[in-house]
Image 1 (tube, rainbow, N blue to C red):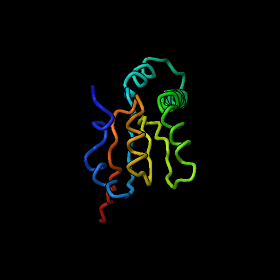
Image 2: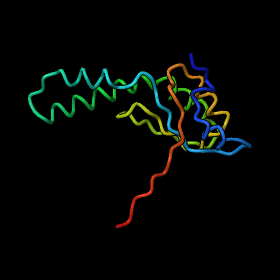
Image 3: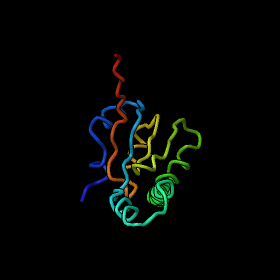
Image 4: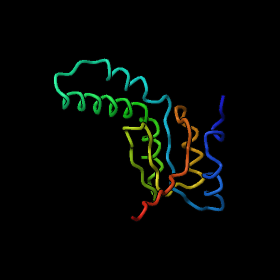
Length: 126
């Protein structure tokens, strides 16, 4: 069984040392495979209905899976300067400006799978 500390990528641990902040991606467990499979088995009359059905299923699942984490972020945001965005399609949450205390509290949420750095990937110029 992984400890809360084991959920935190070493790059994130290093980034928040000495009072620094960093941007992170929080991946929730379990993943979305079951939701995708269930949505794929359903019958839809049109492509638009199928897209809406999958979208709604992913949103509902992520809302439930992220509920405890979002509550924590709402509580911790009082008097602090960080932001977050739910990424329901991948069942992840992006947190901008997380400090060490926040990262450790996030890791303590039971269904958090891992906390990774939010890496910037530059676009290539042609």
